[in-house]
Picture 1 (cartoon, rainbow, N blue to C red):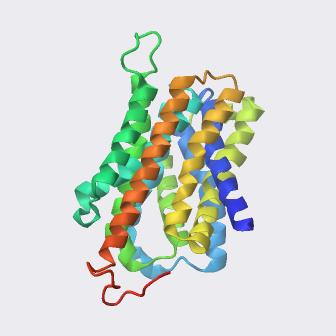
Picture 2 (picture 1 turned 180 degrees about the vertical axis):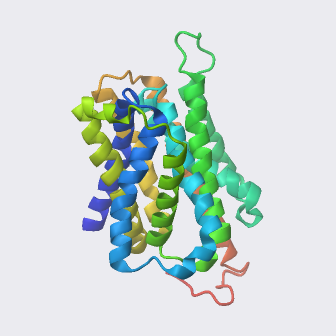
Amino acid sequence: MRVYAIFVFLGVIWGSNFIYMKWAVAIISPAQVTFLRVLLGFLPLAFVAWRQGVIRRDQLRLLPHFAAMAMLATAFYYFAFAQGLALLPSGVAGVLTGSIALFTFLCALIFLPGERGGALSFLGVALGLAGVVLVARPWESAGAALDPVGILWMMLGALSIGLSFVYARRFLSPYKLPPLALATWQTGIATVVLFAFTDLSGIGAITSDWNAAIGMVIGLGALGTGLAYLIYYYLLQELGAVAASGSTYLPPVVALLIGWLAGERVGLPEIAAITLILSGVAVLQVGQRRKAGARTVTPLGKAAPGQACRA
């Protein structure tokens, strides 16, 4: 029971990130928000990694792969979401992040031929993309429609993190690195890159609004990046990858609810969109599980060589 309570807690942490980003980008630039978030998330990760001794010198040979992950899964990913939050309501932005699983599947379809799914997987993608279109509502007049640039940034962020999963599977999984080591390397490198390319002038203005400042330091940094990584890796160990990935179902719902409580408009289109997106993700996962099961069972229903039967 405690594990599932932590599971829900992680969903709340991730879902609340969007309102914190919305507050922050109203005061400082999206690039500055991204830099502060990654820096404040890296510090606790680095401390825990140092205490557990998971960072080793021999890992330096994988520096190019760590750099790629730093860009795909941290620097650009967070920057794109911050850019999107500057143009969209926080709840809508949160709903759009439900498409991450869809982009992950599409990227795997292109770059990992062995991961191609069946008809059920494609149905899941279609449902999810229908939800994204329903959020965007391109048929509405310019004054009523959401900012298409903001939607594009959110989609680019989802694509970036989707690519990162495929990249890690292809280039880093064979090394079986501790997840904490990978997270520390990628946030550390991302911090350096963001520091080099971010205009930091005026970044201290975040302290002019204590709600935004506390949301940045505690909500986005310590909790939303640092602690969230550690909790997710704990769930991977306790529940397994498939069950732990279900934590991505909660943030869009939490973000939409918090946006509504903050006064943002939430109507039937938003509710229908989140239902379509999450239904698509669920159908997609069912399709992937069935395909994985089919690969481990012979046509006669017996366990494939080297596989143990499960009840």
